[in-house]
Image (cartoon, rainbow, N blue to C red; front, side, top):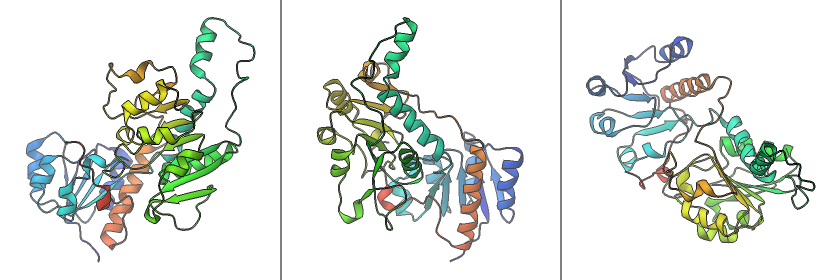
Length: 331
């Protein structure tokens, strides 16, 4: 069923050609371009808006005053904080901009993993101290012929698999469902077919988390998961912090249940100075930031324009949240 866009609330801060492309895509609609924190202008726009294209997550004002909204797009990859029960209760379509940075997020995954495998922290300390340690890697092995387990096989997961294969690794993948055997994967596990993540955890030398945060995946990696993993395995989290039980991670690293971990995301950000994760020698932390794609704003604009087209044509939307993506663990 085709949809007509009459009034569009837009809080994007794009300028120049990027903004012109959004304007062109909405040429048949009234565009209410509002600064997100201008509550009065937001209230006026929400009186009639039937779609909203937001710079960030939706807030209470949008939900309470946007009585006519039928589609909301949040212009970032993770939309857990916008996947509220009210969205699904009211039948509002929710989409995001996942896929805008997949290749560099996969690179970041391997930056963290290689930093652990090659003990980069000690290397840096040795360089500062002018130490040349003979036999430094005698008890270590590289990634070649090791097994990479990928939890979540969307844009990032697929890019991780490409790079894992380039390193000569075996690849295991877990996702909701698979339509046949995906490329660059040796074995896949499907949640919808009743598979758990246990076999992947048990058989992987490195586990990369790239799954969407939801009530289903909240603290998916807990003490039980760590007890299944090899004590030589590494955990890398490039998804969302709350997918991992951070205290269980701390215990697993402290007690040698796994060899190391790297994470760009944490349940509370910035990571509190009091977190014991900071002081673990086998933990690599980056502050939820990755070098950008050559034109990340352009990638976002392309996703938005394509979803505007699909919405108007009544076609399946990119990155559409489903009821099972609901996230209620945070206020």
